[in-house]
Image 1 (cartoon, rainbow, N blue to C red):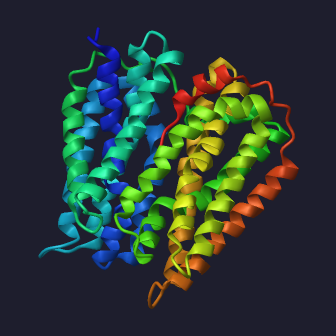
Image 2 (cartoon, rainbow, N blue to C red):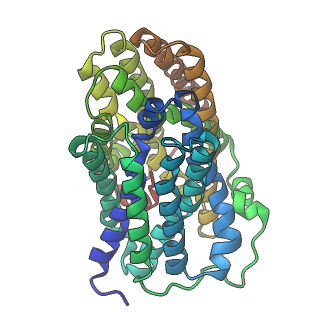
Length: 416
């Protein structure tokens, strides 16, 4: 068994999210500076596609044929190579936007399954998952923050290929590191798995109720405006002449830590519905701040919107995972969480990314003035406000019995 397991797993989780954080907040500005502003949304569609395909890959192939540590290592090495090579097709003598986007897609198709594989590795090794995993997962958030500080604050590389190069190198290092982890046999070897299992249909059928349907619809709809955040906020920051935009974005991840620690108290005091409602209101407030700040580039309002990220993410996504964990029986919990990922990270953010790209390209055609940015942010503001109102009147369920212990235990499923 692994020596110094918590230290080794903390390093694994740090690298896991350092890889993603290194380029995700700089990709939009890099593409804009290389004449690809009109296809920024397609680069961010790759993560949604990866989230949709990942359950099928893990359920049909990974869980049956390959030890976890070997697959984790191989997928990270491949994903690192793909993201490292992508900028070769955006600059220099051989420019091809389709190949650039294709390499980013290959990167995310390889990377997204590793998020669950890394969590599975930690769950297999830790003796007390409930107490130990939240602190291990915290190093993932720190990895994302440190990546943003490095590429933006220290290297000032928001408009260059360096973040993707750093992400690629980190991916290869993570792959090699993964091979040193203990042998973990494929969890689903010899088991049957149907298409309904993979997309969570059986779990949905067992959980189906009016409140649950309202919750799933609200989750899908609130994920649409979420998609505009990582793809276009860094571009907005640069248009507002705010230096080191990817570094400024890390303040949102810093606030995640605070809101995650506060989540048990909010659950105990107000219950699930008001926690979810607070998170949805935070999305509307964030985009209202961006819209109000845009014409005069009011930096404190923009930063306040970024700092709301912890509330937006933890009070909707983490709280949503807790709700599903609370409702689902043990035999369908894995399917139910897979359904959550498919609806939120896959379908919701995928459709939201397409919508944000269409809105951006239509509003910003011929330039990108700050007044145009105000119009851009008003649209997700209105949409988030409508979702919030629908949730207020549609969701009726007594869920105040979720305890602080349940919150901390269930937060182990939290991912970016």
